[in-house]
Length: 520
Image (cartoon, rainbow, N blue to C red):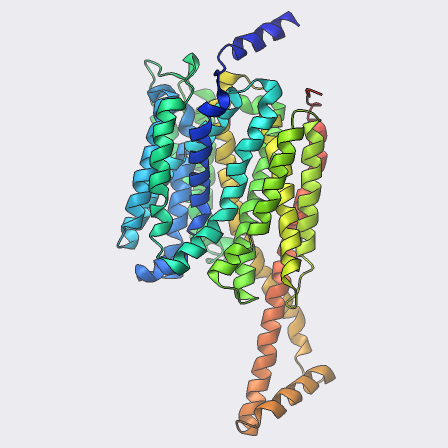
């Protein structure tokens, strides 16, 4: 008991005097970084048109950002020891800001991809460092409230991104989605230099050697993995030989990276934190939730634009109720996270999140706007109510010195989870649409009296404007178009249901956590 008390006292002596003031630049930097991950999605067709690029080529504008940030994320502990954590944080914010300005000035696809790589390299260290600093700036009994405020940037920003990006693209031009980061990034960098807390253990260390071998394995693993996820669906996955070779290469590089980090000294990351049961399980739950979050952000605007005829701005606006739900959950967590068992909050959040996903699975093409708003608000509330306490639960048994390294690893896996979820969406929609089309095409037969009646009714309307033969052909084509639309609708619904069930399946894992302490 005395040992535990002395450990707590040792950690508390490094707490800042005014933690909320020192965390102001963190909240601002996290918000603009996370928002930039989704703000470019709705403007992608406009950027592709400006660069005379195809849709597949323009995808690299998104993937280059993810690849670059994914490489930097697990390396934050090494760079923090090399430059000092505060200095590295300021460098990351400044690099992200300069790269954002360069992205707005790009005149070709090659320039844009290069600038997005720089932007991802600058922003990759922002979230894990911010998460670690927020956790270290407060005593353990107040970390739940701190992470609830931190969750406002992590959860709400990617929801606001598509709406803001659609409005800027429709009313101004796409470069402004990057230019708006410049003043905010400059303010965040100045505030971080002035206000950021810098404890002794987070300052620059001498004789820090770079893990060149581990860094090389990491780059090759993540680059090949991202290309596999992005191009796999278009290449029919493992039916293409080059996809098989690429996946094999990615697995080998991944194994080499993890083995090198375990058996060697002076490594890029410390894998020993994965031995912590709470950290491992909490990270796994967050990976699944990240895949659901980014996949749902990608699938809902796509459904509204392709099936319901919404514009880019209106499809972005469809995410607003989710932001309201997330904000409500953040307020709830701020009051309850340190007063009740966090496992109960996570279980309630996952239950609401799964129910919202299943509710989305019962929509149709005659829905009212309220049918989108209510499940969307519930999904945002469930995501906020579960994501914030699970971050705290996964880090609760780690020391302050382990926070930076653990945050880097955790955010690396969450980044991979988001990429997996986005790729699964494309695969689910393609495959499920084909399955339902195969199941329903047999109904388009002259032996089906309903089909014959619909064709004759459509022919009767069209024969006023064209010949009977052309009218018959157009009527059949119209019915086949309706079949394609219904099969796509079923594909969207099945995907939503899968995500809902997946969230519900995470709830039993919470029993593996110890009961969290509360202030009462």
